[in-house]
Image: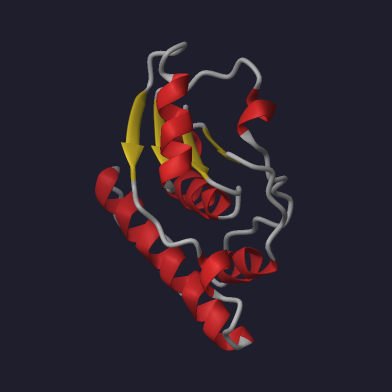
Length: 142
């Protein structure tokens, strides 16, 4: 099982949904944040553009994971990376840090279109990183 995590559970649903879509049934993927998140309409919109529905995703945080174990934890923020490293004290899991822009922080003074473009940038960078890291070919396009 693979686990994508970030600071506020907004970017991680994008990463988890992209990976789950590309991997199909070959990999179990989940996501969570360091702090409780919220369903983000921009995430839903930009993922829908690729034909990936995340509308039913319920943002979770680390404490909601219970006793789940993971083979690999991918972190998208420094704080999440710190928490993931702490998890490796009680489980044997690999940890990778993929520095990723937090679109929620950078969109406050942007128009709706500019904010959506920022989310698309995050989505597209995650998509390319996932395809490269896991050697996936093809996949959805916009």
